[in-house]
Length: 140
Length: 438
Image: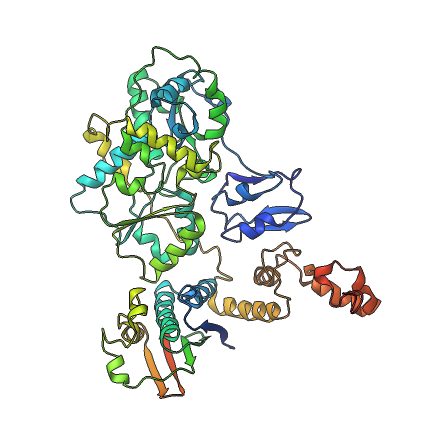
């Protein structure tokens, strides 16, 4: 069975639009009749991924692939890369600047939340080149 | 389910204003007339507000229905009080109601205060999940039911003030008159089509408790004369300012003395908030009040006055009132049986493409493929609000791919050659008629 594929551009620095890809994806997942808890996990992972690309990478792209058993989210950016992935995975650790924090972002929960709400998380990052985050959510 | 929002085919010109403004994409234009997809309509009344031809109306019950009953009770929603220009006290309106066929009044505002008291006394708190979502606006309730199923457990399962008022009023009327309950007519006077629908098909009750709902607009006109030169007003008003305040956004939060709350008004804002709650990124609050209409019930499309003026008038009235009604609720008024939902609202997946997931995915692939071949101008000429909705309609068998004017143009060009372009309206032309004419 051919998977359903969705793709959303994410604009850098645009906090107002951040969350749009997540909302649009969520509507599609509801149309497909996926279980509510799966939709929620996917939406949280997508939102955190979007925010990260907005804050750190001047935008990027979010690709979604839906099969009968899982949702795969692929967040691709050409940003600065993550210097210390292990630290970035720690709750509360963030390199976001004061302006970003004043908007209520940069609480250091992005990657930890992505890990928590996905069943698989792969981070492929290269300094100066960009980051690709792949998250899989199983459909029970 | 019967909706209060209906179309008047003689007035509808088939323009696309309503389809573009409907928050649930529930309207299509077919054979030159708008038509409502019943399973998606939440009776919010947006279409009624935007229709330039006044072709979308709300059917509410007529005052003639009072004749079907031996004894009639009015349950006025507090938004009614904000409609009159020089109102000094709520009793002027309530006494007026006794002159247009009602025998007794039970204010929804009073019921709102009883509900608030119930909430305050509820030792174990609400059985619902935090943050609690207010169950006061039936359009929002229905929206949650068709689009945000995960949020159903967040609804504080309390009946609407007009519903509690109806139950209590019928009981009182039976005791006072000795009549059987079915000979007593209980009618709400409401600001919006969602409440008309809710009176007949309640969201949280297994049986309707109201016999009908009249629109504030209809009742307003009938009240003007009896309210002139009133004297010897009977003291009927039983609510304080708190109950009256629930007609405005934030009023329900205030009534239940919520400390950490957010009050959202306007359907688009509500949808955005519901999206955020669904993802767990709502503001840090315990209670979320949502009203589909601007400024809350005062903004209902069946009112007379603009929402801001109505709000100002309510405020002025409230300044002269005591904060709450002078007597506390009776224990039987706080009975959990009548004050909480008698049935749990169920998810009604109005947007699902197919009950079978594999089939839904197959349909989605066909929708995506068709959408990619459409112009993406969302012109509405096909009768759907945007190209994606049109693609969905085609795949779900509600429309034909030939309904797209661009598809037709392609075919015309095939038949009549490139000159046919000039006969199309400007948005559909590919070239300017004369090159370099400017």
